[in-house]
Image (cartoon, helix red, strand yellow):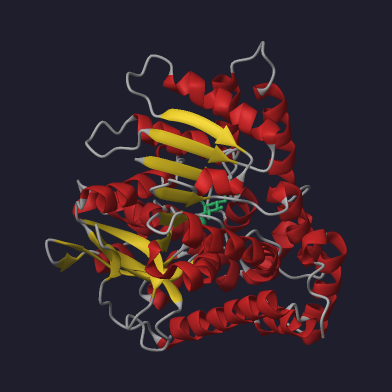
Length: 448
Ligand code: G6P
Ligand code: MN
């Protein structure tokens, strides 16, 4: 089984490789091909993987290349985890929005739109190449904004592209833990929405919904991350537990203020931190694995920290630091490769799951996975307030896709202006000016 990782020089690749090393089952991945545009990053990450593999019998073979077509040929699975524009691009996405007084964040609001506009053309090119060179491969997309990028790729790959995120499973695990559910995987998590825009409406154990017990108990709510982030009263008003990213919507003003007051944005922090890592990891006198582990611990300990601090939510608990996206990816690959049925929350085409969206809209929803792919399960409709947000953000995503197709600046302005977290068409126009000025990859937005 051959797995190709696009963005193979990325910082999270050792997490994926670590998960593969732990997989001893039949049909496991035996070959890993790393692809990246940057040979230096490939070299650094290859060194980390080599140290991880030391002493492990039958560790998956690792090769690397900067030739995309070569990387894709013969792949059974393709993980796409690229970052167009790098972390400097992320920092610019955040900074330009914050300067306009709106949320500057990797995937949500104006920053997420800019990131999407940069990424969709590249993702479409990859999808076309996969369709041509590895038509039977399954593509697992964790390139953000994951829902939008998965939808773009699905135009060429249909249901053979599946988007993943660690946040819904992490949320389900935290709720199960605070409720004292011994085996979180035994719980049915009723979660639906878009990527980074979903709600847990129920958590059933043995058919019984345990969520009302959590919502009714102030002590339990106070001892749980999302309880502190959103506050007990607001969770009770919603009657659901939102994905942590909904904090940017429900407490937008507070978050924007905290982010504007912070010394550095998350992207700028990571840009500097990672630059230091890649320098160290290519130093022959240094253990690349050790350098990676230290950097990772620091990265995770500061995850979304300004947001958490402003909300008094505290830092994420140590046992919960690794979001576990590599485990989602591995579980998905196993279920497909071995036809082992699994239930996972994934980004897939809607079909008829949410009746307010069309069939091709990619949503995030529990799916049954087997050799035939990921099949969304039937869920209850969302309440009106959630439907409103989901439809508004999906409409924005569609404008991003349309701008990427046409190169129309007016369509890009429309995408920003229609977003619930951008409060003026004037701001939207200035955002397009600001982003096109700093991102060379947005030069294609040159038509009217
Ligand atoms: C979570 C989200 C990812 C996102 C990441 C950002 O894991 O699910 O989609 O990319 O957080 O974390 P970072 O450490 O890069 O700020
Ligand atoms: Mn995510």
